[in-house]
Image 1 (cartoon, rainbow, N blue to C red):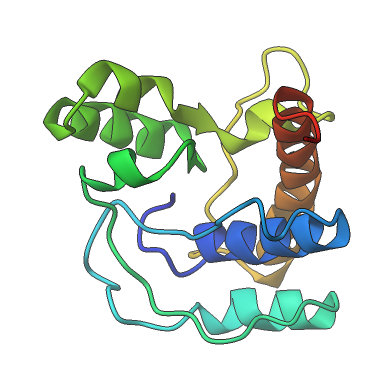
Image 2 (spheres, one colour; image 1 turned 180 degrees about the vertical axis):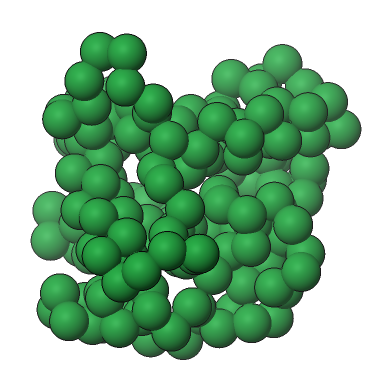
Length: 161
């Protein structure tokens, strides 16, 4: 979950899907992304995010931005925010879910799973939208590490059957 669903969250979606596929878990996990706002709904991924991912060897595919809605909490086991502002929006939106307590419990910050997050460091994935090209590469690096940690944590919680 990010602001407009055109930079960070679709990047995380593509990365997590690939990691799940490589781990043989693609059939177990449904991965998608959404934004807190509706201003980019229907838009493709930001061209700079797409170019950064393509240069890093990812097959990005088609993306259509959408806005997160309270009813999505009922359809998901985990809702991953990319920064603390998005987390706060999700926690407020959880009040409108069918089970607000359960909805709030599903919200996590992606970088909580980043093994390089230093104590006291801001656990947000930075917003590269208004910055230069290097910002998109840094975001991809943070997301790759964090998604690997998230997948490992989910695997530890769901042992093979």
